[in-house]
Image (cartoon, rainbow, N blue to C red):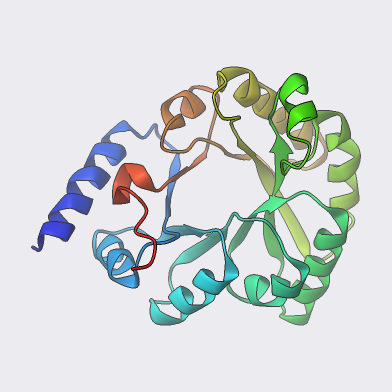
Amino acid sequence: MSARQIEIKRALDDVRAELRPGVELIVVTKNFPISDLEILYALGERQFGENRENELSPKAEALPKDIDWHFQGTIQSNKLRAIVSVASYIHSLDELRHASKISELALELGKKQSCFIQVNLDSEELAKQESNRSGIRAEEFKAFAESLLKLAGVEIVGVMGVAPLNEDPRPGFETLRNLSQELLKVAPNAGFISSGMSGDYRIAMEYGATHIRLGSSILGPRRVGE
């Protein structure tokens, strides 16, 4: 094995040993070369996360077709056709106009697009300072979810959230868990919770995460430009 293969395998084994039963690992591969994804694939990983369509599409084209691609970045309308054609899951749905377009494109492609509702987990104080952060506010969640359930080409599978920087993630993860319970009342099959990244995934699992999204814990520092 090469030094890089050994490095990735050791990190991956460490993370796998910590996973709670039923928790799905998504390896976030943005800014990492296809060679790293090939190593992950050889080690049995099939769930990869990307934030930008311009990386998602070429990687999906180069790698085997049994991979589930998770798109988790900011949605751009002009990239949606390419995203829907490749992604098994979209984690970052927080606008009805995007949901409507996703539904339309999915039906054209003969599929139903699995989506998570992204929730803004920032405290009220932080939200006032960072008003451009992605995600539906908790008070908007119920109405948004009910609107999505009317779209024939979209399947809501759960909720997604990113813990605020430099704050205790627990209140946010608790909010996400509570909203997941609310969602289950109207969408009984939408029980997934996508939360937890390299710095807080252990806490996320305590609060019911079913999907964790890890990059640097497994692949190390971002290898921008390689």
